[in-house]
Length: 433
View 1 (cartoon, rainbow, N blue to C red):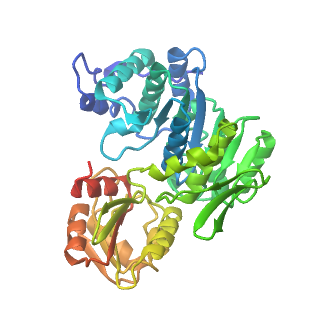
View 2: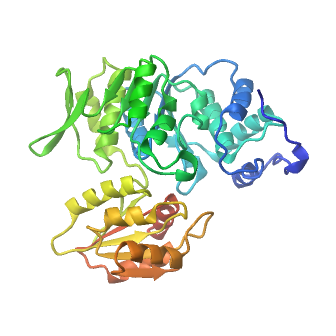
View 3: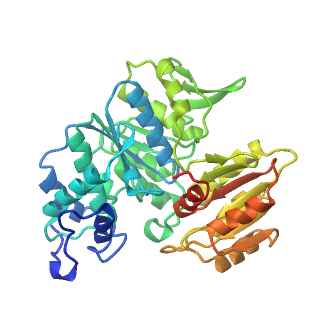
């Protein structure tokens, strides 16, 4: 059943001719009473008006707790290296909304987004859509207009009820399942796994990029007879001297991985997915392209002497990966200085505990955004979780960065992380817009 219609008089009028992208984005924020409202009914109504038939493209849906953006970037790179045309949809953005939609590796322009928003607005009529739902449908419009061969779509939250899931994929990737977005997905891996597995479809191939899938995911795989490529089962990551190797368990394919800053699990999942999609393509000739992939905010290097990195990791699972990476890079004579800003619904204590063994000094900054934690509260929670040692409180992330840089020595390493907002402010601070 279509959702109950809302009266348009409750909402502002759509931007008129000549409206800017910022005006459209403000409008998108106003037309639905909730920021997040999981469910597919509203999106399906508008999707059918925009696309009476499934788009004529190969669709790859990427879900999971962490590693989605890196997986999308790597798969996008491989497909383009193989001569395919691609469209990628990711979220959230760091600094510019245009980052959410890439056509053949390039962000879309303002006028292209505005034209897509106008089309969705005309199609939705009296159906209210959230900011994310509206943007997702606009992304579909952009990819269809461009006529690209492959759509790589990142799930926003969960999977089963996420707007991206209105389209049936030809291949699904689940990067990992761990605790995050507790208010919407619960605090149990089995429950969360069920939601993530909602992107699977009967008989379609899928990739699971982590070593320990919840039973709920494997149950869905079995029930839907999904041919699953699973880390530790159908493929493995191994060390061969100084080189990391991806080895398929059937023994027929072995790939040497180039040096990368992205999580190896995401890199491997992208290669496995590509091999499933393009089995005749030579991996040895194409995989080196991944070495050139730079995903903004994913362990992104922003400075030298001291080295400065930024990462959007914001939950304990991501923090554990980050801690391992930092430990391997720490100079014997240097320190790890953490600049941390977080949203109020995140597991601050879990993140701090995961990083405690490698961080020598915490610089915490408040986030002036919806759900952003103020500096005082964040500092108290960090101090409690880290036994109160070496915590410097600053009003803003920029202030925390400045404080860290003022005291950092050349052999130190500064890591700014905790939220997309934290990383966006960090990139502005270092002129990386």
